[in-house]
Length: 236
Figure (cartoon, rainbow, N blue to C red):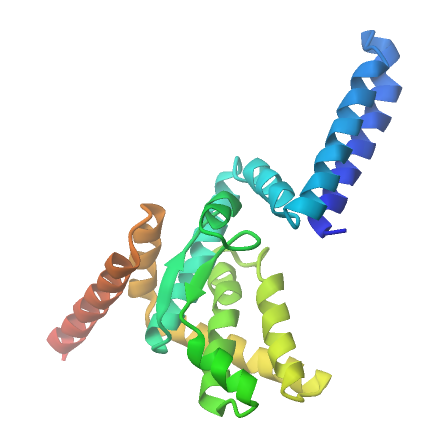
């Protein structure tokens, strides 16, 4: 059972317990919490076996979206991925900022930034992946965590990013200690890139808030970089 389905089961158990305790005080019929619980469990079962957990993910993400900080964190997190990919010349094909948007585009989970990673997939299949490609993707995967931390002093997202990095490195034969070392190294690499291109990052965040297209996002990044260069030249 997926983590999302387990979350729905936990919610149903909580509601049942809560209603049993308070039901007599508010004259709530025992049938109401029972029906609600069976409904939630039914949804969780259907979601797990028919939708691979995506339905529950959409519901939980929708509930979380009522928090302005949650929405803000997602945008800043994904902007970190997008900017870093652009700077490292990894083609970006799109982005989503919610589980609903991801589902509509046929993507799993809560979505995020999509890459044209045909080159990475080909090299992984051949077992001859270049060190340059590894380093680029590892830095991109860590950039969301770094961006969120730089803005909010902590990162709530990033578990999937760490998992991707760990899985790829494990498949290439890196030991656990080597994977941890690579993760720390690429966190620093991502931090340096973001800090050096902070004006581009801030401009990108504003564009993504307005759901700008990838082409518009790339234009905003380049325009901000050009303005920064001009200011540096003027100062010298």
